[in-house]
Image (cartoon, rainbow, N blue to C red; front, top):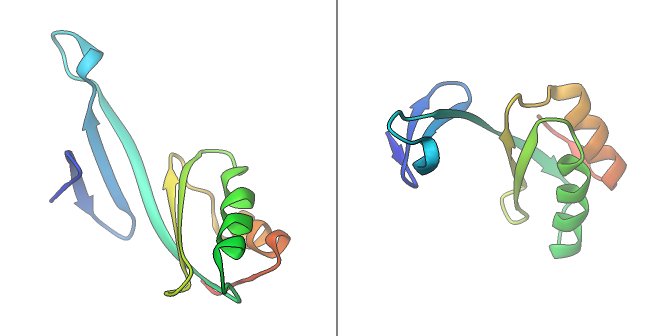
Length: 99
């Protein structure tokens, strides 16, 4: 599967490998994992910003995409945080981690 110029493996989490252009004659592969979680209680962009800010503080997280309408948050990073730290971050932002 290709995803935005990366080779991705569909598993429980999306794992993407990207080639680094500055790698010189060899190619360096970067492992990036993605997972989606459900968050309830978000209704606006302010909600999304609060959730994004708290999850972004977790070790290993390099990106957070929030879809308020769907109630989902996509977390990108390596290594990905487990459920407990994600739950704490979502609750710190004032919302409910639904899995």
